[in-house]
Length: 334
Image 1 (cartoon, rainbow, N blue to C red):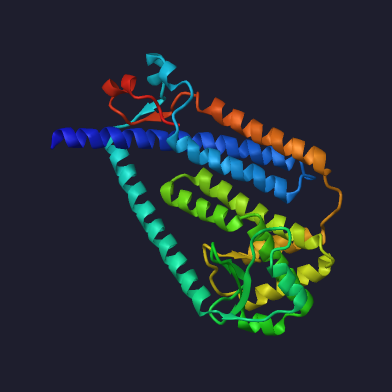
Image 2: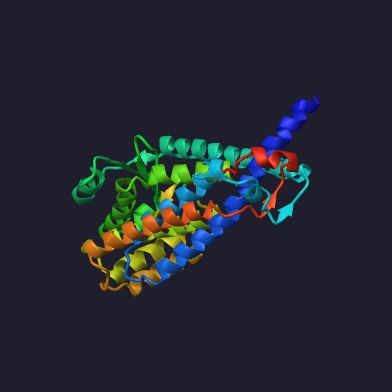
């Protein structure tokens, strides 16, 4: 019995050591990325979403991968943590970790089942020829059906292999052909970018690592930039800024007091975010960094984020939980 408890204690200590390191290292990395992007206002939302996606993935890897020079660490480095807490604290934190992961996992499964049932019960409609052309994919291999449902309060994409764009029945009756085209164009851009699969990966990672606030914050920035990128695609079409802003406002009026679905990719998420998006659309400028320099800047930022993450993982631990006698035998996980 005691050897088993000792083994559990060592495992929980290693996991929580890694968690604490990933939290503060991830926070430093996320702040640096946010500052860099703040000084590059001309960088488009698509490029920003790429940077945040890579940042998110690196924050996840900080939990599970060993540091590049873990085997070369000296005894002094392994004992360099500023605070050493009793291993029982790691057991308590590890237990909380497991409970939150289980709770979030159940929420994710419940949401997926609910969305599948919504898609099955939805009513397919025959759209206008111009809308049908958009639904067939255009410049992407993915296509979608358009359906109406009385159970949704906003346009959203559901389904990974056979995606459907669900529209609230009341909304479909009120939207003009131009508004409907804008909504479909936004949702099809999500599919073209494979945002549904990326969104699923994000939610699974949040289930696995629910105690990392840095991961939560970066995931939120990624979601925002993803919606901005799809908005930009709509603005590149023939519709005007005012027309699209009014369309989003009409979407909000229908679902202001109802909850959104966690796995659905929609034309809007929260009212505060909607206000931010409408404001961004109305003040949208064409003064953007050109494609060539934008690609170079994006690549440089991604490489810089990777280099920064590697460098941060070489820093000494701030808090440790493992028994001191074991510290020289366990390399820190990233």
